[in-house]
Amino acid sequence: MSKSIKILGTGCSKCQSMTGVVKEVISENNIDATIEKIEDVMEIMKYNVMATPALVIDDVITIKGRIPSKEEVLALLN
Image (cartoon, rainbow, N blue to C red):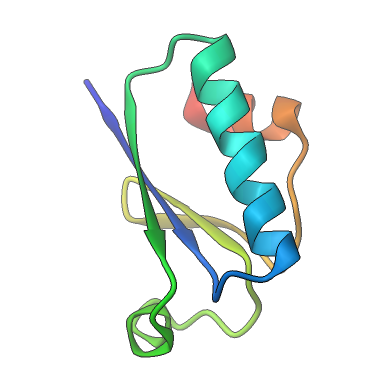
């Protein structure tokens, strides 16, 4: 079953770094997932997230306010 991944952030360097980490983990491990980047502040507010970047996997906020390691992202996706 495909994972639904959303990266919440306004496009800052931290947000771009998180996107890169998530994309690397998905491609290196052949994980079936769709990535959606949400940069609209009003949309981000719907998740009640005050610190970006934030990682949402299958509509559950898993990380906020920091860049995760590749190992951490892999553990969250498995």
